[in-house]
Length: 359
Image 1 (cartoon, rainbow, N blue to C red):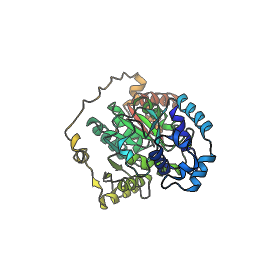
Image 2: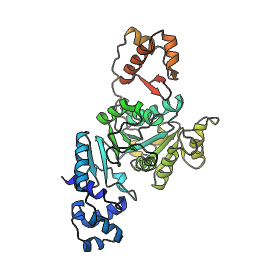
Image 3: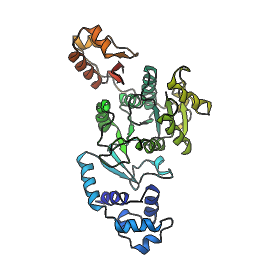
Image 4: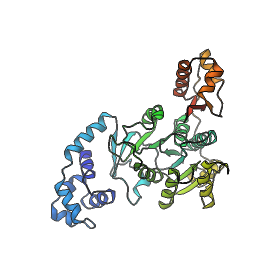
């Protein structure tokens, strides 16, 4: 399989994304790189002797075969730089990943907007992310985010409400569901959207992975919308990546008394476009301005009396599970089961800290 040679070459020590690209440009295929002689490798511009030695000494084929089996077993695939569906915008990065691990289908990645923000988002942040994503999706825009709790998850769910294209970029392997409370969303993204990563199977969500993940989020997108970000947050790293990549940066203004608004408000001071409505973004994408797609049909949901009792307590403002327990007079087990069913049906959303609100 051709994929095995791509995996094997990337596994060679000292072969990073830039070196991989240089070798690929010279030899055209990873298989030819791996079979090249010392003289042929040394003739490649920008390839140092240490890299040549590593290529000649390292045999990554066994690892690559095992990795390929793991990918197939998990229902994933490789989208390589030579693939027709490798995202066009990503090709223009200085260090594009030679391939992406993908679970699901990359649909319409050419016109994508990233939505990022706080993991500890307020109800305002969650609601804004979901609404902005849904409205952008209605105009044929693919929504990109990082699958984190808070704003990221709300943005993906907003797009999924329209059965629209959405891409989740992971800081771990595509076989790792992180964070755990997003496992339902993870499964839905794999079946209706796409999960992508440049990290090998089984890679854990280590802190050092996320800056690399953030550059892919911005690299896939024409612009990045930041909703609620504290100073020094990962969302600001994504915004910085966007600027370095020549992408647009947008920001939703926030409460001046909230620490979650300091990062976004500072972005606006520094020149990010202030966004109040989806039109503020669409006017920067002329081919999509005024274009709409039909709303996804809303499925009728039939509630049991107990489900109706719990549903009636929820609104667009979050409520803690303890308050639901007190006001519903149901047992903890009954309430937990009902909330899970409502979440699986896309009726409600769960926020960090066992807070719930209407979707």
